[in-house]
Length: 144
Image (cartoon, rainbow, N blue to C red; front, side):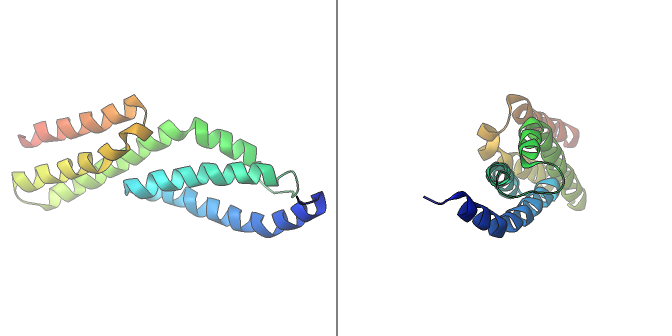
């Protein structure tokens, strides 16, 4: 539908926006403890890298090539998810330290597990097991 010059013009307009959005997604993925934010932004990161890979045919980009970013995002997804789970668990531990009762402490770890369970289908079996193991170990330590 569009000629090459029109595609180049459109790519030149949209690429800076996609690059900015990809940077924001990466920052959220690396910092959040909100499962919805993590998995939504990780998907967004991969989607934007795919779009930028196509756009790179029309626009030169500095830094890591979009195809390489996409490959890395796919290759590192399990490790990034593991890091995210550990951040969530650390937050649960900090919150558990703030409450005084065993019930309150258990509640923090139940919340940790229940917030991640809906995303098990997006995780490797190993990461889903990690969530369960961290939860179970924490409950053992507080007498749950």
